[in-house]
Length: 258
Image 1 (cartoon, rainbow, N blue to C red):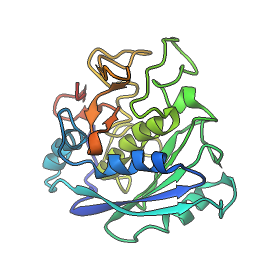
Image 2 (cartoon, helix red, strand yellow):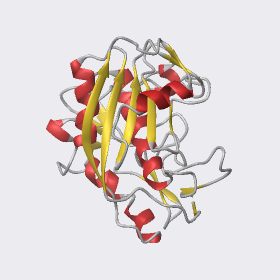
Image 3 (cartoon, one colour):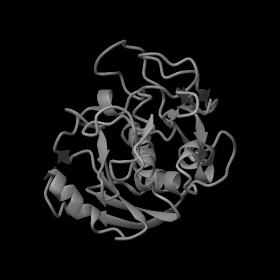
Image 4 (cartoon, helix red, strand yellow):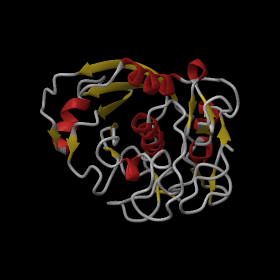
């Protein structure tokens, strides 16, 4: 993982959520609780975030502090149900212009340019993030391991910790994209490979969630005895989440919470 001398996100940063399309109140709460997660039972969302401290220490930047900002709900599909990148940027502009990451979350009936074909979400260089709900379009690609994979070994899917395959899959992608936004916000921070298609803190560890992971197997995870759901992090309000491994630049290996 090479540091290209660019700026990392620092200071107190608000994460604003722009829900585009129809999300239930429960779905919005799953996502907002993830962003709002502070110290809780271990392993925790907060501890996962602290894994990025090594990136910040090497670049001599104080570790950022993320907090839940404002939430915008657009259930009227202002820009239609088929969006291009320029539309995502317009939606992101509804969030705060400074000291913020504006996250556009599209509902399962919204088609987005490149969605399912080459990506499950993305982050732009103007510190905005987009993540799509893949439940109706490509859960085998963007919500694995909570859905049968589209390709490769066909192991049984895991039970989603919040009971929503699409939104629990969104959490995985959102977490990874926020980590990439923090450590490579403007395309000249930490990444591997070509600048046009970089591997970042989370995308450098695809499909790894727990120790012992290999293609088609997410790793040894915690299991909720009441629901049978698999997870590796505790969050706000007693929630459980599955978060991707982050590349550890000091060991050149993928670091997992469990």
